Amino acid sequence: MSSNLKSVNVLGIAATFVGTVIGAGYASGQEILQYFVYFGPWGIGAILIAGVLFFLTGYFAMALGRKLQTSDYQHVVNPLKNPIPQYFCDIMILFSLVGTFVIMIAGNAANFQRQFGLPLAAGGIFLVVLCVINLLFGMRGLVLIQSLIVPIMVVVAIGVSLYAIANPISAAATEYEVNSSPMIKNWIMSGILYVSFNAQLAIAVLVPIGHEGRMKRSTLFWGTFIGGFLLGLGALVEYFALIRNASIIGTTTLPMVELAANISPIMQGVYTLVLFFGLYSTAISCFFGTYERFADIPALEKFGKVPLLIGIAVVCFIASFVGFKDLVGYVYPALGYGGMIIMVLMSWMYFKKVGATGSINPDPGTLRQAADAPEPDEA
Image (cartoon, rainbow, N blue to C red):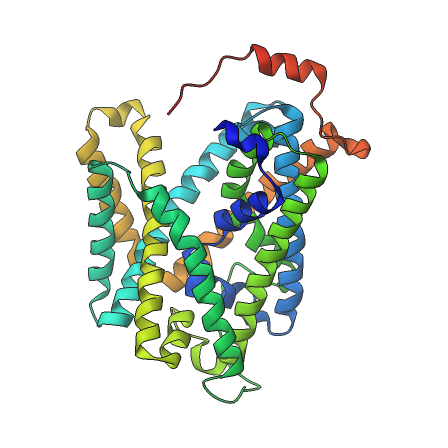
């Protein structure tokens, strides 16, 4: 972690928080459709729950990173210092990486089919081949792509949403059918699960920032508060756009692309391109993380890099034929239920270590341990 984190400010924390959570699932509209629009007016309550929980999750993660002087997020979800939470976190991380990679493949398959009329397999094969080539020849440029595409994706998605709110495709219908997940039973659980499946990556990013950044408690508070507010606001804007047009796009695979197409063919093309880069940047990150974890398994080391990469890609490509809608409806809630356990463990650790005092300053003993610890190798 670079030393410039010592000067991280409120807006820097908020931007990192939002950039970590917002992804291709949000840009496609399928997440918002299943988690919030399906519940009608109660979806607003679910979004409010999500906004509050995003703030608490972000604040707890950064505060514990500073208090415990650790950049390893597994330390902040292990209040009893038992190996079981560590194993559980490892399994959830791997499941999250593989599951998200599969969903990105399915999303690009649907995206290319919608835009170019290609068979579903074509878009999936294109993304998988691109990811394999990318990893074989290096990861240069990926960070730049991610830093550019996330702000563009958010701006374009909000712009299309605002247009769709002001110019609905048809008059709002009182009855409509909307995609839903059989694993989400009510709006309260939906708001919780939306945060818990997103929280795992957010925690992994925010804990090191809390550890390395030399910021005041107020900076942590307002940075994560603004981040949680913006995440809730973004979901709310897209919610109103989708529910305003639910009678038309409620059962579609890529509802936001449908709304963009209603503006103009050019806007549809722009949105398709932005969504592709969002899918690609998420997919390559998850593919790289999946490969790194499987490459550490002794039984798989003998296969070598290329066969292992191709093997993972083929298995995930086959799994993507479940379909984008169904994968979002099953994989993300499953990750959410596991993420709820991680959030509970982290909250337990927060109240155990920070407690009623609210002080996030490291204890002297913790500082000595951190000073004596060997420096990690530079990447």
